[in-house]
Amino acid sequence: MTPDELVRAFGTAIDARQASLLVGAGLSRGAGFPLWEDLVDGAAVQVGVPRLDDFPLWAQYVEDAPGGAAILIDEVVRRIASVEPVPMQNHRLMVKLPISDFWTTNYDAMIETVDSALDVVEHDEALVLRRAGDRRLYKMHGSIPYGVTTPVGGRDQLVITRNDYERYAEATHPRLWRLLQAQFLTSSFLFVGFSFDDPNFGEIFKMIRRAITDGPLMPHYALMKRPDDDDGHFAARTRDLEQAGINVVEIPDYNEITSLLGRLVARTLPMRLLVSGSARSPNQPTWTTGTYPTVATPDDLNELATAMGAALAAADVPGLLAAGDVGARVGYSYLQALDAYDPARFVLLRRRDDERDLTPPSRRLGEIRLAETEPSQLRDRAFDSVRCVLLLGGGRGTLDEVRRARAAGMSVVPLAVSGGAAEQVWTEMRSDLPNHAIGQQPVPVDLFDQLAADRTTAIPAAVRLVALGLFLQ
Image (tube, rainbow, N blue to C red; front, side, top):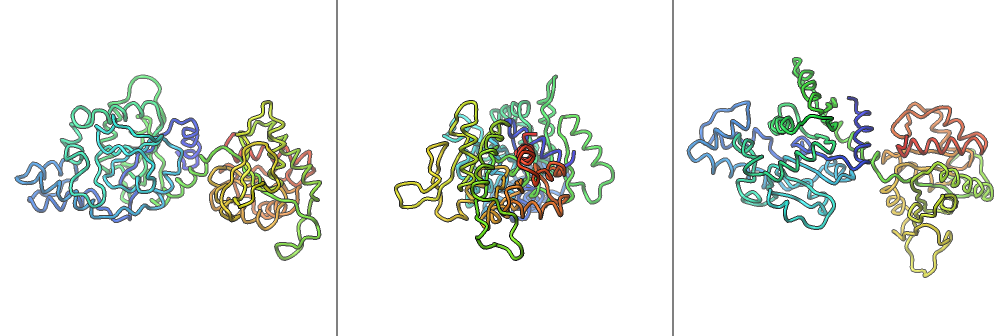
């Protein structure tokens, strides 16, 4: 499976609320936490147990040695608890995904440090003590927060030795095991931060095989890097995983994880369109050197915005967000053209101020949200809740929104016939169209060219490109 196919397939599962994430140690690579072999090696040296490639069995031999049980647990807790959790970009991206259930085999507190609102399940009994919150983090192998001296819930909740894995389902973690089994059969999982030689992944894969029943399987996905010294085992292991419904996405290096998570975040933002732009008169100064692009008059732009809103309603675009006059005009037309008025489908962002009355636009249609006081902060707030940006006219502020949208991985649809910034952005994109994307797919040249045609041609083309940008097609 290719990365592009993963983004489309797992993004669809997230939209359907049938997605979970299972995180391994690789996601914290470079954060200062010891690797599995380092955790066991310190205790193994103290009790005189030689190294084994089977890490759970190696840990078992260490624990079984005279005095080894106390030495092993003390070593593991000391090494993990001494590293302050400073989340990395991967952790910040993953918690932005609209997923309700996160699972991890890691002992550290990196994920919950990013999002303190997560309902963290640190041991089996906690499943009967759920607190308020619609998103959960299951620490399926135990938890060792920063600065502690014992694992949360005691030694039995920590999974490290062969016996720990064998007793997991029936003795120490029966609730977590059954919940994991149920979710594996009803949700698509994305495995992130694991390798084929990761003992946690190997043991989880054994559990998955036991969970498989007759009938169709949910598709699952795993990001994997081919070993530098691969001798053909990668392809064989990949086929083995695919038989259990796990599609392997080969990545060239671990930095690709950050890129893919970023694409998934952009793909799964709320299914709403941001309408950006403003009306400018021909005698206003340019914002760039050279000739100012064609400028639509305010009246022409208002008519265009009204027609655009009606076309978006006819196409049943799920929702709109705007912050300026032109966007408001599109939104008002969109609401009034819907078969049934639904104010939640159009949100008008307004800057907070001390005035009692709203400055224009201030019609009592849709929802009005007062947020921030600076234009740049208002734009940042907008980009947290949209997937695609439609440009009509506009000036410097619109160009700034384009820059921010592209940095966030969003699609940009410039309605060139509206002039202003929209025409300038269209011209720049058209000169290098193969290096741009809408909906994380190549831009259809014929539709893109129609954005610069007459109004009756440009508006339907914009609607179709918006649908691509919202991942409706």
